[in-house]
Amino acid sequence: MEIGEILQRHGFGFKKKYGQNFLTDGNLLRAIVSDAGVGEDTVVLEIGAGAGALTRALAERAKRVLSFEIDRTLRPVLAETLAGCENAEIVFRDFSRCDLAALEKELGEYVVVANLPYYITTPVVMRFVEEAQNCRGITVMVQEEVAERFAAQAGSPAYGAVTAAIARRGTCEITRKVPRTMFVPRPNVDSAVVRILFEEDRLPVKDPAKYRAVVRAAFVSRRKTLENNLMQAFGLSRVQARAVLAEEGVPEGARGETLTPEQFASLADRLSELLP
Ligand code: SAM
Image (cartoon, rainbow, N blue to C red; front, side, top):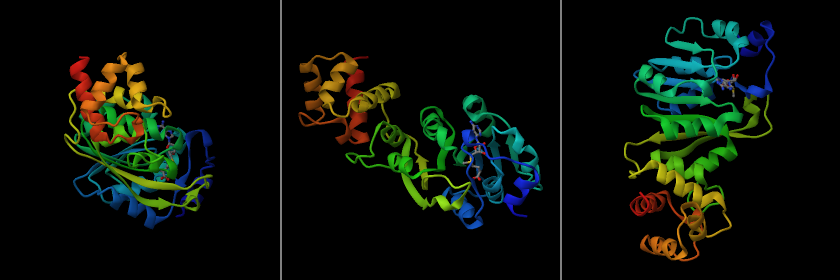
């Protein structure tokens, strides 16, 4: 049975405010599951079950799928589309309000796989990057522009605070581009699947909060030099800021966007010593 038909039969109306753009193409769904490296031992956390097309494709390969869905009107639809999927469970709740630490205790090691609602893409990904302990990877469909920001190289126009935050926890790459025509209803932009693989001690820093603060300072005003941004953010004198950057081998007048995540980590550690 076609998903469109099932939705229609249940009188379902798409809600723009929840970013409801559903996938239906079986090949694409299986490709996302494969990009995510899901296998028979994998526990998957999905955000936004929608009509359950991705949930079902995941459940066919995974050990367990736990999926959040904010829209309760999808309950009868999901009961039908996920009939017989014993290893898939839907929680009808706003994921942004869930207690991630408690959820992680229940899940053990897991990966996140989702076709994310566009209006919460960055906060959701940042939440895992900053707070998750048991997450091994995130494979998500996001707007193409956002995917490019996540996976950007230092010095490129798309490189920013989010890129550097992700790079502290893992590697990030775009696995496939997905045209807008693959979604129902069709959005105004193209999308891409992006995969973040978490690595233990990928960029160890003395104090993750200091790393965050350095990165924030570096990008707060892109037109200013890193020296000026550091002075303002950390209350350093010009002499101090210049000395710190010289010790890190950063050329005078450099802007934050030219530093690699490794350089931010080293700079954050130096500032942790200077300003404990
Ligand atoms: N996974 C489905 C698919 O690929 O066809 C649906 C993807 S659709 C882009 C995003 C889904 O996330 C929608 O069903 C929407 O209702 C749900 N959603 C939006 N905000 C949410 C939130 N805060 N918590 C949980 N689900 C949410």
